[in-house]
Image (cartoon, rainbow, N blue to C red):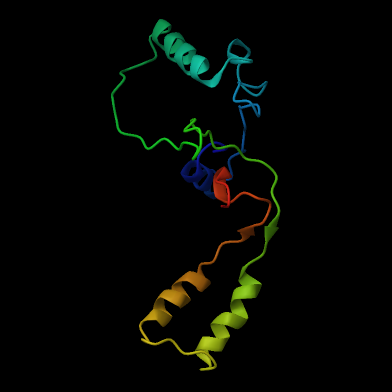
Length: 140
């Protein structure tokens, strides 16, 4: 759950511990089994597959499409990593904006845009202000 946004949400729902297995330079840390500690992430993945095959625990390997996040400048693969961040609680900021449209102080033309506005503000996420947004993407 500590390395993928969707897995993180599942982990939160099921109150799973968030175990980070990567160092800041994408090597395997001491949270993983000893045999993989210190290995580069790509080498560790290959070794894990080899170990599963050796123990006859791997049923099959299938090709599948996966959108792998890459950096804008270098196109290096980005591994999601939970880190401490600073957030602004957005809901209290959204409440007066919602009220201003509800009571008519602000009007949308055409009116149908108010639905989009309410959908967005009623489901607003906290705002990461520490130079990163969700899961490590830089603010440009």
